[in-house]
Length: 373
Length: 239
Image 1 (tube, rainbow over the protein chains, first blue to last red):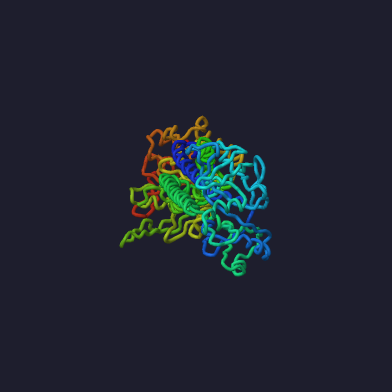
Image 2 (cartoon, rainbow over the protein chains, first blue to last red):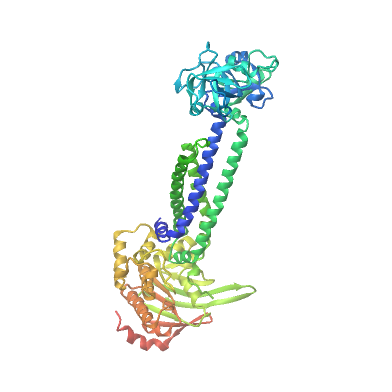
């Protein structure tokens, strides 16, 4: 630590340059993780937020709501199965809504219309207004994105391509589905919108897209055998099945992985070149009695200090950036993720110094004597 | 016994097909309080001799006993420890750590062994004061003159109170006035602190400060008597 600190202090400019590079890497890592987090929230927040553990789909739908169609009565049967504490149907459809009083095209908003049973565990708490009522089929609760777009409680919405109307009675927050703000309505209302065309329900009575199950110890294999034509998966598998979710997440994760791999090499090479430059100095220190451990510790301590400070600066910059990003940008920093990536970066930079430490152990103290015949 | 002893030491290098005998049956004893010089042309094996004495290189044949320890029987870790505790190196160019100030140059050696105590700090300051560096404690190597750097290196060699001092061409980069100063200081510190000291040099002007002079030629070490008279005369004026 002694050598490490003294050298950092003495060679400010050199270490500042390496520090800046580490800061930039950390900054980019955090921004990417924020974007990834934001995108996946946008894509599947409703799924992630809901208090369910497993989801039952129609067999062959590959965990996708849009490919699956089931009879709602299946929920009652599932509820009786082992380890299932509650089960309820859910339906989803995409649509475009417009304030009834307006006819301007530019005020149209794309939304996800989600059908649920009012009052059960799928219904999110409202932050403003009233919850859904089973006997009020017109009433809906909407994500607060709509509020930001000028909709208010009491507004009546027209649905494009349909004669159906809805009235906003409450707002919820952080409810997005398939990148769109969610509007929650009753299952019956949802059916009249989704299955307006004759035959589109494939003859299934009271259709739903999927059935959400509560119960942490559910044995999905057993349910698959017990109920023909269904497949039950964990909630996280269902999230993966959201359209585009895997692709978006995969892209971000791949960028992150490459960034981390590249930064390992970049930092590793930097530290290695620094070490090479000082190899004569290390030889002398070894000749006067420094052990490999002593010198190795000095290098690792230096890298640790440098990375630690750089990562902290990177975090501050990231939060600063978050403040000035445009409103519609799907950017959401998860503090837990920031900590995880910080630790990962710290580990990576220390790993990258290992090659330098190895070099130091190989330096022969004999070179201090210089001109050996 | 303390001091350093070479017993029939030989060193063989493999250079491609050929074998080079860098040291040929060298025997030598340096007692505590004794300051000896080894001179010889380049390629004579002086550096090999110093490297073996400094536990940086192991001999092919024969034994080197340093302060009662046989160097051939130690592993690299123990050798590093021995270099730290028993040997003080003064190298050709002072070879100070560029980012440490004069006082820290000494303290880092203490750090290698563990913690730096208050006594260590005081001892370091006393040493530096003795060598006329009291006003330069906070200076970095690039702010020092060549002589001051070499004096710092001398102080560094003495900080751990080693039993033997090894100097490798300590005057190589100095003008003759500073060179005399530096060797005089090494001689003085060796005497007052009762160390065994070996200086490898080709600078014959410096031999007057040494108790004995050995000449190295083609790996063989011979005692050179021609300097003896002059030395005893000069030594009485030191210390």
